[in-house]
Amino acid sequence: MNKLRVTRIIIAAVFFVAALGTLINIFPSDSITQYALELQFTPAVMGILTGNFALILILLAITLLFGRVYCSFICPLGIFQDIVHNLSGRILKKTNKEIVKKNSGYKKPHNILRYTILAFILISLAIGITLPLSLLDPYSIMGKISNNVIVNLNNALNNLFSLIAPETLYYQEYVKWSIYSFIYSFLALVGIVSVASIKGRLYCNSICPVGTFLGMIGECSLFKIVINKEMCVKCSQCSKNCKSNCIDLETKEIDYNRCVVCFNCITSCKRGGVKYVPFWKKGDNDKKESNTGRRNALIAIGGLASAVAVRKYGKLDSCISGKTSPKNTPILPPGSLKLEAFKNACTSCHACIEACPKDIIKPASFEYGIDGIMLPTIKYNNGYCKFNCNACSQVCPNESIQKISLEEKQKTKIGLAVFIAENCISKNEGIDCGACSSECPVQAITMVKDSNNPSIEYPSVNPDKCIGCGACEYRCPALPKAIKVNGIL
Image 1 (spheres, rainbow, N blue to C red):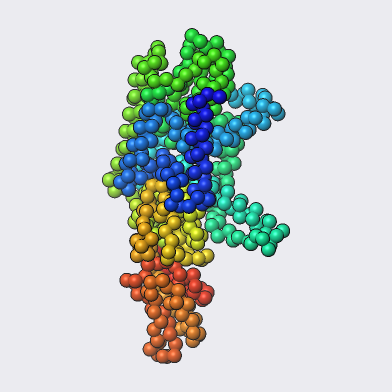
Image 2: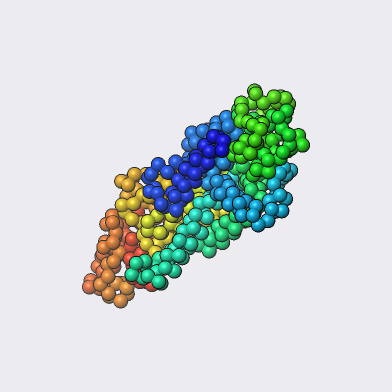
Protein backbone atom coordinates (compact mmCIF):
# COMPACT_ATOMS: atom_id res chain seq x y z
CA MET A 1 0.00 0.00 0.00
CA ASN A 2 1.32 3.43 -0.95
CA LYS A 3 2.84 5.44 1.93
CA LEU A 4 0.76 8.50 1.05
CA ARG A 5 -2.47 6.51 1.28
CA VAL A 6 -1.40 4.95 4.58
CA THR A 7 -0.62 8.41 5.94
CA ARG A 8 -4.01 9.68 4.82
CA ILE A 9 -5.82 6.76 6.48
CA ILE A 10 -3.96 7.23 9.78
CA ILE A 11 -4.58 11.00 9.92
CA ALA A 12 -8.21 10.56 8.89
CA ALA A 13 -8.74 7.90 11.56
CA VAL A 14 -7.29 10.19 14.24
CA PHE A 15 -9.48 13.12 13.21
CA PHE A 16 -12.60 10.98 12.87
CA VAL A 17 -12.23 9.33 16.28
CA ALA A 18 -11.36 12.66 17.92
CA ALA A 19 -14.26 14.54 16.30
CA LEU A 20 -16.89 11.84 16.83
CA GLY A 21 -15.68 11.12 20.36
CA THR A 22 -15.97 14.80 21.26
CA LEU A 23 -19.37 15.18 19.60
CA ILE A 24 -20.86 12.27 21.54
CA ASN A 25 -19.08 13.32 24.74
CA ILE A 26 -16.74 10.35 25.11
CA PHE A 27 -13.80 12.72 25.42
CA PRO A 28 -13.85 15.60 27.93
CA SER A 29 -14.80 19.02 26.60
CA ASP A 30 -11.41 20.45 27.56
CA SER A 31 -9.30 17.67 26.01
CA ILE A 32 -6.97 17.97 23.03
CA THR A 33 -9.60 16.33 20.82
CA GLN A 34 -11.44 19.66 20.83
CA TYR A 35 -9.03 20.81 18.11
CA ALA A 36 -10.62 18.26 15.76
CA LEU A 37 -13.80 20.38 15.94
CA GLU A 38 -12.09 23.75 15.76
CA LEU A 39 -10.29 22.76 12.53
CA GLN A 40 -13.58 22.13 10.71
CA PHE A 41 -14.10 24.45 7.75
CA THR A 42 -17.49 26.01 8.45
CA PRO A 43 -16.81 26.74 12.14
CA ALA A 44 -13.56 28.35 10.97
CA VAL A 45 -15.50 30.53 8.51
CA MET A 46 -18.09 31.50 11.11
CA GLY A 47 -15.24 32.20 13.52
CA ILE A 48 -14.40 35.23 11.36
CA LEU A 49 -17.60 36.82 12.65
CA THR A 50 -16.18 36.64 16.18
CA GLY A 51 -12.76 37.93 15.13
CA ASN A 52 -10.89 34.62 14.73
CA PHE A 53 -9.13 34.59 11.34
CA ALA A 54 -6.33 32.13 12.15
CA LEU A 55 -8.14 28.83 11.54
CA ILE A 56 -9.64 29.75 8.17
CA LEU A 57 -6.26 31.02 6.98
CA ILE A 58 -4.66 27.72 8.04
CA LEU A 59 -7.27 25.68 6.13
CA LEU A 60 -6.98 27.85 3.03
CA ALA A 61 -3.19 27.56 3.13
CA ILE A 62 -3.40 23.76 3.43
CA THR A 63 -5.75 23.61 0.44
CA LEU A 64 -3.55 25.90 -1.68
CA LEU A 65 -0.56 23.71 -0.87
CA PHE A 66 -1.97 20.18 -1.05
CA GLY A 67 -5.42 20.35 -2.70
CA ARG A 68 -8.73 19.23 -1.18
CA VAL A 69 -7.06 17.20 1.58
CA TYR A 70 -9.54 18.62 4.11
CA CYS A 71 -12.28 16.44 2.63
CA SER A 72 -10.30 13.20 3.03
CA PHE A 73 -8.15 13.96 6.08
CA ILE A 74 -10.19 16.21 8.41
CA CYS A 75 -13.91 16.32 7.57
CA PRO A 76 -15.73 13.73 9.76
CA LEU A 77 -18.63 13.35 7.33
CA GLY A 78 -16.24 12.87 4.42
CA ILE A 79 -14.30 10.22 6.32
CA PHE A 80 -17.58 8.57 7.34
CA GLN A 81 -18.57 8.35 3.67
CA ASP A 82 -15.23 6.74 2.86
CA ILE A 83 -15.84 4.11 5.54
CA VAL A 84 -19.33 3.40 4.19
CA HIS A 85 -18.12 3.28 0.58
CA ASN A 86 -15.25 0.94 1.43
CA LEU A 87 -17.43 -1.48 3.40
CA SER A 88 -20.24 -1.50 0.84
CA GLY A 89 -17.73 -1.94 -1.98
CA ARG A 90 -16.38 -5.09 -0.38
CA ILE A 91 -19.90 -6.47 -0.08
CA LEU A 92 -21.09 -5.44 -3.54
CA LYS A 93 -18.02 -6.91 -5.26
CA LYS A 94 -19.17 -10.29 -3.96
CA THR A 95 -22.91 -9.86 -4.44
CA ASN A 96 -23.56 -7.42 -7.28
CA LYS A 97 -20.58 -6.54 -9.45
CA GLU A 98 -22.83 -4.82 -11.99
CA ILE A 99 -23.66 -2.01 -9.56
CA VAL A 100 -19.97 -1.51 -8.82
CA LYS A 101 -19.11 -1.44 -12.53
CA LYS A 102 -21.95 0.94 -13.37
CA ASN A 103 -21.02 3.48 -10.72
CA SER A 104 -17.24 3.41 -11.05
CA GLY A 105 -15.15 5.31 -13.55
CA TYR A 106 -15.36 8.88 -14.76
CA LYS A 107 -18.64 10.80 -14.42
CA LYS A 108 -19.34 14.30 -15.66
CA PRO A 109 -19.54 16.92 -12.89
CA HIS A 110 -22.88 18.44 -11.87
CA ASN A 111 -21.45 21.93 -12.02
CA ILE A 112 -24.72 23.84 -12.43
CA LEU A 113 -26.10 22.21 -9.30
CA ARG A 114 -22.86 22.65 -7.34
CA TYR A 115 -22.33 26.31 -8.09
CA THR A 116 -26.00 27.16 -7.66
CA ILE A 117 -25.99 25.66 -4.16
CA LEU A 118 -22.75 27.45 -3.25
CA ALA A 119 -24.07 30.79 -4.54
CA PHE A 120 -27.32 30.32 -2.61
CA ILE A 121 -25.41 29.53 0.58
CA LEU A 122 -23.19 32.60 0.22
CA ILE A 123 -26.13 34.90 -0.51
CA SER A 124 -28.05 33.48 2.47
CA LEU A 125 -25.00 33.93 4.65
CA ALA A 126 -24.62 37.53 3.51
CA ILE A 127 -28.22 38.52 4.30
CA GLY A 128 -28.17 36.95 7.74
CA ILE A 129 -29.67 33.48 7.23
CA THR A 130 -27.50 30.63 8.55
CA LEU A 131 -30.08 27.83 8.26
CA PRO A 132 -29.22 26.67 4.69
CA LEU A 133 -25.55 26.44 5.64
CA SER A 134 -26.29 24.52 8.85
CA LEU A 135 -28.43 22.05 6.87
CA LEU A 136 -25.77 21.34 4.22
CA ASP A 137 -22.47 21.87 6.03
CA PRO A 138 -20.81 18.45 6.45
CA TYR A 139 -19.48 19.07 9.96
CA SER A 140 -22.85 20.35 11.20
CA ILE A 141 -24.61 17.36 9.63
CA MET A 142 -22.22 14.99 11.42
CA GLY A 143 -22.82 16.83 14.69
CA LYS A 144 -26.59 16.50 14.34
CA ILE A 145 -26.33 12.82 13.41
CA SER A 146 -24.08 12.20 16.42
CA ASN A 147 -26.33 13.96 18.91
CA ASN A 148 -29.78 13.08 17.57
CA VAL A 149 -29.27 9.58 16.15
CA ILE A 150 -26.20 7.94 17.67
CA VAL A 151 -26.79 9.19 21.22
CA ASN A 152 -30.51 8.41 21.14
CA LEU A 153 -29.79 4.98 19.65
CA ASN A 154 -27.36 4.36 22.51
CA ASN A 155 -30.08 5.39 24.99
CA ALA A 156 -32.58 3.08 23.29
CA LEU A 157 -30.19 0.11 23.49
CA ASN A 158 -29.41 0.93 27.11
CA ASN A 159 -33.11 1.05 27.96
CA LEU A 160 -33.73 -2.21 26.13
CA PHE A 161 -31.05 -3.98 28.16
CA SER A 162 -32.28 -2.29 31.35
CA LEU A 163 -35.47 -4.32 30.96
CA ILE A 164 -33.37 -7.46 30.94
CA ALA A 165 -30.96 -6.46 33.71
CA PRO A 166 -32.55 -3.61 35.71
CA GLU A 167 -30.14 -4.15 38.60
CA THR A 168 -27.20 -3.37 36.27
CA LEU A 169 -28.52 -0.70 33.92
CA TYR A 170 -30.99 2.04 34.73
CA TYR A 171 -33.52 3.61 32.39
CA GLN A 172 -32.36 6.82 30.69
CA GLU A 173 -34.86 9.51 29.78
CA TYR A 174 -34.82 10.88 26.23
CA VAL A 175 -34.43 14.41 27.56
CA LYS A 176 -32.53 15.69 24.50
CA TRP A 177 -35.17 14.46 22.10
CA SER A 178 -36.31 16.93 19.45
CA ILE A 179 -38.63 15.69 16.73
CA TYR A 180 -37.42 18.20 14.13
CA SER A 181 -33.74 17.50 14.78
CA PHE A 182 -34.24 13.75 14.89
CA ILE A 183 -36.19 13.60 11.62
CA TYR A 184 -33.65 15.76 9.81
CA SER A 185 -30.66 13.88 11.26
CA PHE A 186 -32.14 10.45 10.55
CA LEU A 187 -33.00 11.36 6.96
CA ALA A 188 -29.55 12.88 6.50
CA LEU A 189 -27.92 9.69 7.80
CA VAL A 190 -30.02 7.45 5.57
CA GLY A 191 -29.37 9.67 2.55
CA ILE A 192 -25.63 9.92 3.12
CA VAL A 193 -25.23 6.17 3.71
CA SER A 194 -27.37 5.30 0.65
CA VAL A 195 -25.48 7.63 -1.68
CA ALA A 196 -21.99 6.93 -0.32
CA SER A 197 -22.42 3.15 -0.42
CA ILE A 198 -22.99 3.19 -4.18
CA LYS A 199 -21.86 6.58 -5.50
CA GLY A 200 -18.88 7.32 -3.23
CA ARG A 201 -18.29 11.06 -2.89
CA LEU A 202 -21.33 12.15 -4.91
CA TYR A 203 -22.65 14.28 -2.03
CA CYS A 204 -19.28 15.98 -1.60
CA ASN A 205 -19.00 16.78 -5.30
CA SER A 206 -22.61 17.65 -6.08
CA ILE A 207 -24.25 19.20 -3.01
CA CYS A 208 -21.73 20.01 -0.29
CA PRO A 209 -20.94 23.76 -0.37
CA VAL A 210 -17.65 23.20 1.45
CA GLY A 211 -16.54 20.64 -1.14
CA THR A 212 -17.44 22.97 -4.01
CA PHE A 213 -15.63 25.91 -2.44
CA LEU A 214 -12.48 23.95 -1.61
CA GLY A 215 -12.56 22.33 -5.05
CA MET A 216 -12.35 25.75 -6.69
CA ILE A 217 -9.30 26.55 -4.58
CA GLY A 218 -7.76 23.11 -4.95
CA GLU A 219 -7.55 23.53 -8.71
CA CYS A 220 -4.50 25.78 -8.25
CA SER A 221 -2.84 23.86 -5.41
CA LEU A 222 0.92 23.51 -5.31
CA PHE A 223 0.85 19.70 -5.21
CA LYS A 224 -1.33 17.65 -7.54
CA ILE A 225 -1.93 14.02 -8.47
CA VAL A 226 -0.67 13.55 -12.03
CA ILE A 227 -1.07 10.79 -14.61
CA ASN A 228 2.02 10.07 -16.74
CA LYS A 229 0.39 9.88 -20.15
CA GLU A 230 3.29 7.99 -21.70
CA MET A 231 3.22 5.27 -19.05
CA CYS A 232 -0.58 4.99 -18.96
CA VAL A 233 -2.02 1.99 -20.81
CA LYS A 234 -5.65 2.79 -19.90
CA CYS A 235 -6.03 -0.26 -17.69
CA SER A 236 -8.73 1.79 -15.87
CA GLN A 237 -7.63 0.70 -12.38
CA CYS A 238 -7.10 4.27 -11.22
CA SER A 239 -10.48 5.35 -12.57
CA LYS A 240 -12.29 2.37 -11.03
CA ASN A 241 -10.82 3.09 -7.61
CA CYS A 242 -11.49 6.83 -7.72
CA LYS A 243 -14.31 7.51 -5.25
CA SER A 244 -14.85 10.97 -6.74
CA ASN A 245 -15.29 9.69 -10.33
CA CYS A 246 -12.95 12.43 -11.49
CA ILE A 247 -10.34 10.56 -13.59
CA ASP A 248 -11.03 10.79 -17.35
CA LEU A 249 -9.24 7.92 -19.10
CA GLU A 250 -9.94 9.34 -22.56
CA THR A 251 -7.87 12.45 -21.90
CA LYS A 252 -5.80 10.95 -19.07
CA GLU A 253 -6.63 13.99 -16.98
CA ILE A 254 -7.89 14.48 -13.42
CA ASP A 255 -10.63 16.93 -12.49
CA TYR A 256 -8.85 18.67 -9.63
CA ASN A 257 -12.01 20.52 -8.67
CA ARG A 258 -13.50 17.20 -7.54
CA CYS A 259 -10.36 15.31 -6.50
CA VAL A 260 -10.25 14.83 -2.72
CA VAL A 261 -6.61 13.64 -2.72
CA CYS A 262 -7.30 10.20 -1.28
CA PHE A 263 -4.36 8.60 -3.15
CA ASN A 264 -6.42 5.54 -4.14
CA CYS A 265 -5.39 6.04 -7.76
CA ILE A 266 -1.68 6.06 -6.89
CA THR A 267 -2.01 2.79 -5.01
CA SER A 268 -4.03 1.11 -7.77
CA CYS A 269 -1.60 1.91 -10.61
CA LYS A 270 0.74 -1.06 -10.85
CA ARG A 271 3.01 0.70 -13.37
CA GLY A 272 3.72 3.67 -11.10
CA GLY A 273 2.22 6.04 -13.65
CA VAL A 274 0.25 8.11 -11.15
CA LYS A 275 2.19 10.39 -8.81
CA TYR A 276 1.66 13.26 -6.36
CA VAL A 277 4.04 16.01 -7.44
CA PRO A 278 4.50 19.82 -7.37
CA PHE A 279 2.71 21.59 -10.21
CA TRP A 280 5.93 22.59 -12.03
CA LYS A 281 6.63 18.92 -12.68
CA LYS A 282 3.20 18.29 -14.08
CA GLY A 283 4.07 18.67 -17.77
CA ASP A 284 1.99 19.87 -20.71
CA ASN A 285 -1.14 22.04 -20.74
CA ASP A 286 -0.12 23.58 -17.39
CA LYS A 287 -0.49 27.21 -18.37
CA LYS A 288 -4.14 27.11 -19.43
CA GLU A 289 -5.10 24.86 -16.52
CA SER A 290 -3.29 26.99 -13.93
CA ASN A 291 -4.94 30.16 -15.24
CA THR A 292 -8.37 28.55 -14.89
CA GLY A 293 -7.52 27.29 -11.42
CA ARG A 294 -6.32 30.70 -10.25
CA ARG A 295 -9.45 32.35 -11.62
CA ASN A 296 -11.74 29.88 -9.84
CA ALA A 297 -9.78 30.24 -6.61
CA LEU A 298 -10.06 34.03 -6.73
CA ILE A 299 -13.80 33.79 -7.43
CA ALA A 300 -14.30 31.40 -4.48
CA ILE A 301 -12.25 33.43 -2.00
CA GLY A 302 -13.76 36.70 -3.22
CA GLY A 303 -17.29 35.33 -2.91
CA LEU A 304 -16.71 34.03 0.60
CA ALA A 305 -14.97 37.23 1.72
CA SER A 306 -17.81 39.35 0.33
CA ALA A 307 -20.50 37.24 2.02
CA VAL A 308 -18.75 37.33 5.39
CA ALA A 309 -18.01 41.07 5.09
CA VAL A 310 -21.64 41.89 4.29
CA ARG A 311 -22.78 39.63 7.13
CA LYS A 312 -20.35 41.20 9.62
CA TYR A 313 -20.57 44.86 8.62
CA GLY A 314 -23.64 45.20 6.41
CA LYS A 315 -26.16 45.34 9.29
CA LEU A 316 -28.67 43.30 7.30
CA ASP A 317 -31.32 41.50 9.34
CA SER A 318 -32.63 38.11 8.32
CA CYS A 319 -35.75 38.56 6.20
CA ILE A 320 -37.42 35.57 7.88
CA SER A 321 -36.14 36.05 11.42
CA GLY A 322 -38.71 35.62 14.16
CA LYS A 323 -39.48 38.50 16.51
CA THR A 324 -38.47 38.12 20.13
CA SER A 325 -39.59 39.91 23.27
CA PRO A 326 -38.58 39.60 26.92
CA LYS A 327 -41.27 36.96 27.42
CA ASN A 328 -40.36 34.66 24.53
CA THR A 329 -36.63 35.31 24.18
CA PRO A 330 -34.81 31.95 24.12
CA ILE A 331 -32.24 31.28 26.84
CA LEU A 332 -28.74 30.97 25.39
CA PRO A 333 -25.96 28.81 26.85
CA PRO A 334 -23.62 30.70 29.21
CA GLY A 335 -20.87 32.49 27.32
CA SER A 336 -22.99 32.93 24.19
CA LEU A 337 -22.80 36.01 22.03
CA LYS A 338 -25.77 38.37 22.04
CA LEU A 339 -28.90 36.87 20.47
CA GLU A 340 -28.52 38.08 16.86
CA ALA A 341 -24.76 37.57 16.87
CA PHE A 342 -25.29 34.06 18.20
CA LYS A 343 -27.73 33.27 15.40
CA ASN A 344 -25.21 34.68 12.91
CA ALA A 345 -22.33 32.51 14.11
CA CYS A 346 -23.86 29.20 15.27
CA THR A 347 -24.28 26.39 12.71
CA SER A 348 -26.09 24.06 15.13
CA CYS A 349 -23.49 21.31 15.25
CA HIS A 350 -24.98 20.36 18.66
CA ALA A 351 -21.59 19.81 20.33
CA CYS A 352 -22.78 21.94 23.28
CA ILE A 353 -26.00 19.94 23.56
CA GLU A 354 -24.14 16.69 24.09
CA ALA A 355 -21.54 18.29 26.37
CA CYS A 356 -24.15 19.54 28.85
CA PRO A 357 -24.15 17.14 31.85
CA LYS A 358 -27.61 18.28 33.01
CA ASP A 359 -29.20 17.81 29.55
CA ILE A 360 -30.83 21.25 29.62
CA ILE A 361 -29.45 22.44 26.24
CA LYS A 362 -31.79 21.21 23.52
CA PRO A 363 -32.37 21.79 19.80
CA ALA A 364 -34.77 24.70 19.31
CA SER A 365 -38.05 24.41 17.48
CA PHE A 366 -39.12 27.93 16.52
CA GLU A 367 -37.90 29.86 19.57
CA TYR A 368 -35.46 31.79 17.36
CA GLY A 369 -37.78 32.03 14.38
CA ILE A 370 -37.82 29.69 11.40
CA ASP A 371 -34.24 30.59 10.48
CA GLY A 372 -33.06 29.40 13.91
CA ILE A 373 -34.61 25.95 13.93
CA MET A 374 -32.32 23.37 15.59
CA LEU A 375 -30.07 26.01 17.18
CA PRO A 376 -29.22 25.18 20.81
CA THR A 377 -31.40 26.71 23.52
CA ILE A 378 -31.81 26.08 27.23
CA LYS A 379 -34.99 24.62 28.74
CA TYR A 380 -35.38 23.91 32.45
CA ASN A 381 -38.07 21.24 32.40
CA ASN A 382 -35.51 18.46 33.07
CA GLY A 383 -32.85 20.22 35.10
CA TYR A 384 -31.00 23.46 35.64
CA CYS A 385 -27.62 24.99 34.79
CA LYS A 386 -25.06 23.71 37.30
CA PHE A 387 -23.26 26.50 39.10
CA ASN A 388 -19.91 24.73 38.87
CA CYS A 389 -20.07 23.71 35.18
CA ASN A 390 -18.89 25.45 32.01
CA ALA A 391 -18.70 22.44 29.68
CA CYS A 392 -20.79 23.92 26.86
CA SER A 393 -18.49 26.92 26.49
CA GLN A 394 -15.45 24.66 26.08
CA VAL A 395 -16.65 22.67 23.06
CA CYS A 396 -18.00 25.35 20.70
CA PRO A 397 -15.66 25.28 17.67
CA ASN A 398 -16.43 28.77 16.34
CA GLU A 399 -16.87 30.70 19.60
CA SER A 400 -20.53 31.52 19.13
CA ILE A 401 -20.32 30.32 22.73
CA GLN A 402 -17.20 32.00 24.07
CA LYS A 403 -14.72 30.02 26.15
CA ILE A 404 -15.18 31.29 29.68
CA SER A 405 -13.65 30.22 32.97
CA LEU A 406 -15.77 28.69 35.71
CA GLU A 407 -15.48 31.90 37.72
CA GLU A 408 -16.70 33.96 34.76
CA LYS A 409 -19.53 31.53 34.13
CA GLN A 410 -20.76 31.86 37.71
CA LYS A 411 -21.19 35.58 37.12
CA THR A 412 -22.71 35.31 33.64
CA LYS A 413 -26.37 36.28 33.37
CA ILE A 414 -28.23 34.09 30.86
CA GLY A 415 -31.77 34.88 31.98
CA LEU A 416 -33.92 36.47 34.65
CA ALA A 417 -36.30 34.68 37.01
CA VAL A 418 -39.82 36.11 37.17
CA PHE A 419 -42.22 35.37 40.05
CA ILE A 420 -45.79 34.47 39.06
CA ALA A 421 -47.82 35.10 42.19
CA GLU A 422 -51.06 33.44 41.09
CA ASN A 423 -49.27 30.08 40.75
CA CYS A 424 -47.38 30.14 44.07
CA ILE A 425 -48.56 27.53 46.57
CA SER A 426 -47.00 29.48 49.44
CA LYS A 427 -48.84 32.69 48.67
CA ASN A 428 -52.17 31.17 47.66
CA GLU A 429 -52.42 28.05 49.81
CA GLY A 430 -50.32 29.02 52.81
CA ILE A 431 -47.97 26.05 52.30
CA ASP A 432 -44.51 26.48 53.76
CA CYS A 433 -42.36 25.94 50.64
CA GLY A 434 -39.34 28.14 49.81
CA ALA A 435 -37.88 25.58 47.39
CA CYS A 436 -36.85 28.29 44.93
CA SER A 437 -35.08 30.33 47.59
CA SER A 438 -33.17 27.40 49.07
CA GLU A 439 -31.92 26.25 45.66
CA CYS A 440 -30.68 29.61 44.39
CA PRO A 441 -26.84 29.46 44.24
CA VAL A 442 -26.41 33.25 44.27
CA GLN A 443 -29.02 34.10 46.91
CA ALA A 444 -31.01 36.14 44.43
CA ILE A 445 -34.33 34.91 45.91
CA THR A 446 -35.47 35.74 49.42
CA MET A 447 -38.70 34.82 51.17
CA VAL A 448 -40.71 37.88 52.26
CA LYS A 449 -43.80 38.07 54.46
CA ASP A 450 -47.17 38.82 52.92
CA SER A 451 -48.28 42.28 54.13
CA ASN A 452 -51.87 41.05 54.39
CA ASN A 453 -51.00 37.79 56.15
CA PRO A 454 -47.62 37.78 57.96
CA SER A 455 -47.79 34.02 58.47
CA ILE A 456 -47.35 33.52 54.72
CA GLU A 457 -44.01 33.96 52.96
CA TYR A 458 -43.48 34.13 49.24
CA PRO A 459 -40.37 34.58 47.05
CA SER A 460 -38.96 37.90 45.88
CA VAL A 461 -36.36 37.99 43.08
CA ASN A 462 -33.43 40.40 43.11
CA PRO A 463 -32.83 41.02 39.38
CA ASP A 464 -29.33 42.37 39.99
CA LYS A 465 -28.20 39.10 41.56
CA CYS A 466 -30.15 36.62 39.42
CA ILE A 467 -28.07 34.85 36.73
CA GLY A 468 -30.96 32.84 35.27
CA CYS A 469 -29.55 29.39 36.08
CA GLY A 470 -33.05 27.91 36.36
CA ALA A 471 -32.57 26.13 39.70
CA CYS A 472 -35.60 27.96 41.08
CA GLU A 473 -37.82 27.08 38.12
CA TYR A 474 -36.79 23.43 38.11
CA ARG A 475 -37.31 22.99 41.87
CA CYS A 476 -40.63 24.84 42.02
CA PRO A 477 -43.29 22.20 42.89
CA ALA A 478 -46.19 24.27 41.54
CA LEU A 479 -47.85 23.39 38.25
CA PRO A 480 -47.87 25.61 36.33
CA LYS A 481 -44.60 26.97 37.67
CA ALA A 482 -44.72 29.93 40.03
CA ILE A 483 -41.28 31.09 38.95
CA LYS A 484 -40.03 31.11 35.36
CA VAL A 485 -36.76 32.15 33.77
CA ASN A 486 -36.94 34.33 30.66
CA GLY A 487 -34.13 34.89 28.22
CA ILE A 488 -32.50 38.30 27.94
CA LEU A 489 -32.10 40.37 24.80
